[in-house]
Every structure is written in structure tokens, then in C-alpha cells.
View 1 (cartoon, rainbow, N blue to C red):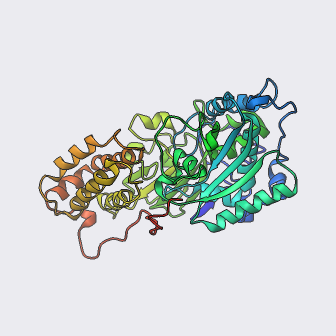
View 2 (tube, rainbow, N blue to C red):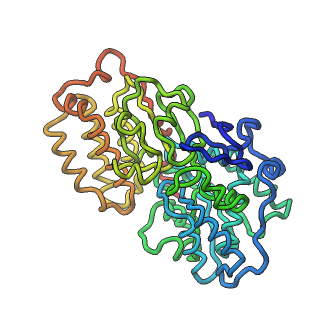
View 3 (cartoon, one colour):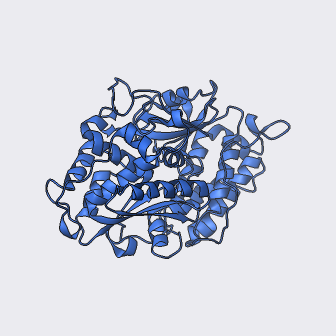
Length: 458
């Protein structure tokens, strides 16, 4: 999948616009090089790393005018997490900095969402921007180590990050120790408690919370765990300030975001856009098919929607919340007009049912049952009152899992029943919708990863 940048002003010369649209901040220089930026190229693009002022506070607590300045700047910028949850980054940093003892920073680049490629694109093009943000965040919260976590299945990406860390060590750039780790690549392994559990020597499976990582995380120390894109934005805010950051995006959702746009588009790829760019505009930039009827927002824990209902909605948390959606990790997938949304959802639910950690009934029994009901529905040959069964199961599972995996799968399933309501009625009455009729079945469109070592969690 291609990466796209160079669509607007560079990071050093931002230009406010009346309506959010494409932007180039994180993606500066991506198209020119087509390869990871060396430390020298990175400094040429963004300038030198702004070092924290002297006077590091004791016990991991930033003092006035020192590391606390970056936390204040991030808070004023209004940066929120870009990994999916959208939690205010400044609040998270301050919570870690307020705890006793040395802290830990974790850069989460696991990206277990199959429909997203933004973190992979960022790390493979601008590794030093992520490491800048991690180093600066470490100084701000009083951390003495940074753990960079990437999936074991991307050995080439592991090499890029280790080479970048080695470059910085040779330049004696950072005051904090950095380690790159390769974790098992399961869907739930990117969840923050799973990452912490693995770093503590356990399995890459979610654990019960509380305590949260900011309370007791890696080695039982206060831990700042942020998505790699979030940390890259921290690196830019430290250089250019919160006012600069707010020149893009919406007043209540400022900045830019990386979005993976795919499906029925002529130029699929990773795009940098201002937060709040209308969904229709984002698809137009990527060359969406004129007859797109449905779009998946947020990925496999996201929601399906009729394209006409969301085309004018801003890609931002507050506007999407009103229709039960969320930007998640920035995924937009346009369903081809001749594809069956029920069939595609069935494939994803079947995969999600096999991706649980096996720690609770909803994952072990509930999700496979829902996936089977969807498979019957998609085939047009349901056994018994399949919609009644689905309604009962979808109402029972939420909130009862050991982690959020069951809830995410249920959210996707419910949205499919709503977005494809006419097809649901057709399939439930032992007929096939227009997309599923005819001779040869249409090729699947949503990406499903090839099976990985199912029993490897450590």
C-alpha cells in the first residue's frame, strides 16, 4: 500500500485553512526518499532535537520550567492518542509524571489492526521522529528507559528501528536508554496491558485493570504507553509549539492524523489529513469509486455506515460519536459496489473469533457463535431464527469479556446488521442480495492476515 504526502504545506511552514483537508507534517519528505530517513536527513527536515532544560527533577517529578514545560505544551496543543482510544496525551503524561520513582516510556508500534498501515508507514519513513517524541516524553515524565514495541512478523521494520536507535547512540543524542522489542503479532497483543504484560516477562495477552500502566506498568513502575504516531506529534509540538499544532484541524480536535484509506479507491494508501476533514473529501482524495455505497470507519473494531450518511461528517471523535462511530486508528475502507457487506463482515468476524486470548467465555464461545450465525446469514441458508439468535447474543456479550476484544467484534456485527439492513432481510429469507447473486463469487476485499503461530504468545 502506498504512502502519500506532499499534499499541502511542509511542517516548517504551516498554513491555516478554512476547511480541514490534506496536510504534510509527519509525512514531510516521504515521497522524495521512499526509504527510512537517516538521522542527518531527519535533522535537515525538522531541525535538531530540542533538549530538555537542565535541572531534572528528582523522583520522576518534572519541576517548574523544566520537563513540565513539554507536558504543558502537549496539553495546550490538545493532542489526543492516535492509537484508537483518543485519550488526551497531556493528561496521560501528567499522570505518569506525578507518580513516585523513575518512570518508563513505551512506544507502541504493534498495529494489530489488519486494515491499518499507518504505524508501519510512519516507522519505515520517519523512525527518528517517533524516537524524538519518545525521548522527549521520557525526559518530561522522568523515565530512564524507552521500550519500542513492534510486531515480530515485520522483521524488516525491527531492523529499521534498531538501526535508528544505533544511529542515535553513535551521535550520543539521547539521555535515555532505548530498546527495540519484537512481540507476538496477535490482534489483542497491541492492547496496552498485553504489551506491558509481555515486557514484564508474561504472555502478550490483555490483563485485568486496574492497575493501569500509569500506576504500575513495566517493572511495576509508572509507565507512559503511547502509540508511535502520538509520540511523533510530541516531537513536532516540542519543536514548533502548541499554537503551530492547532493551526491544523478543528478547535476541539486539533492537529493532523494518519489515515489508511483502502477498498474501492484508485490510490489506496496512508494519507496525512487534518483532523476533522470530511469523510467524503478523504475518499475523494484517494480516488473513491463513484458508486461506493458503504464505508467502514475505524477498522475491525469499527462500524459500517451508508456512505451518504457520513460523507459530510468530519473524521473526528465528537461528530462521529453521534452515529455510534469513532475514528479509531484512522481507517476508512470503501466497500466496492459489487461486494456483499455481510460476506465481508462474516470473514472479519470469523477471523476475530480466532484472535481472542481465550481468557473468557465471550471470546471462547460467544464470538465463534456470532461468527457462525453471520456465516449462515451470508450464505442465504440460515438455520432457524438466525436474527433472533444474533440479537440475543449481541445483547449478552458486551461488558462481560476479560478485555475489550468481544465488545469490538460485537460493535462491528451490530453495525453491519444496520448498514446492510435490506440485505439482511433478503439473506434471512433464504435469498441472496444482488451482490451475492450470480456465478463466480466476488473476490474478498477486506484484508485478513495469514495465520501466524497461534500458540506463541511470548
